[in-house]
Image (tube, rainbow, N blue to C red; front, side, top):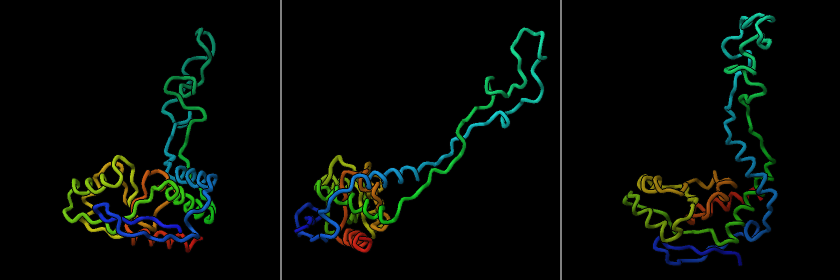
Length: 210
């Protein structure tokens, strides 16, 4: 049976949550994972690098000196790429690195990423994640019980203002909703940490796309 343990906030085992065999405990498709990660990283590039050509740099109007008789090399413009402060030859210009892969490939990559975490016992579920005090120290105590020193992806759909305040300054922890989880998010973190309801929403999302 495919299942994962659910813990209380004190790290006491409360139940076992059954998982859909259509999604979990499946073969991991590594080439598809690579495609999804490369697409994500490419789409986050700004592509804002810019250099000036010889037509864009300041100067370059008059010939620096006459063609012959000075003993110096021939020069027609001080904006030449050969000159200091001259233009750049074949330098970078702003460009868009964005591209996409087929939707079915994205969905398969997401399922494969979740299976990576499942097979490595890196899915951690709790009944509910609530930090009523709103203190970072209290949130740090909770995460130290479950995944001390790990990079954690917290998947939670509804979160109180106090809970958000307590978690947002913790290093190595990212909070995201079940509807926006990507393949890269899952693979970039050591632990997939969620409450029951949010994980159910995430599982249903994958089932609809299977």
